[in-house]
Length: 180
Image 1 (cartoon, rainbow, N blue to C red):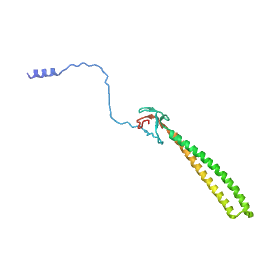
Image 2: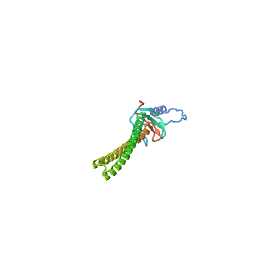
Image 3: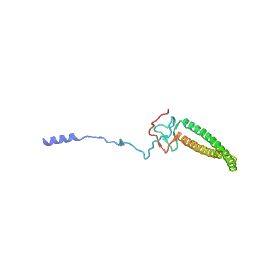
Image 4: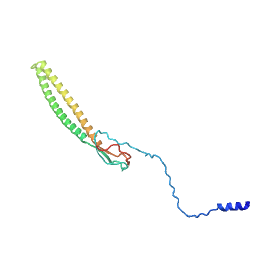
């Protein structure tokens, strides 16, 4: 009886399977963060309103593509103001040069008259002082001209920062500002 029981038990364990050929798809998913080799934070050196943004998040950009434009009206007015100031100082320098030229002539004339005894020492010293004053005014005007020239150069250099371009090829990851 023991043999019959074992035989019945073994026959119950045998199953029939059909085999067919299928392709097995292997999919693996991972969670992680991808960092680029080179990441740049783009900002402008200018204070002002953003006039237009030319890219969106996820856009691919090439080097020197325009990313956004800052409203250049403030810089344009600074340039115009600096140009006007430079013109004014040029006029002041010209006027001061003419004054120095006239003062030199007066000084030379009074010097000759003083040496001949035709004018007093006090009048001659007034002309000498007048010449020094005019030279000082010329130096001041030239200094103001240098400042006006520097202001114009600075305003012109600032104007090129109103258009912001991509420094490298890449993908726009995020935008922090919107147009005003």
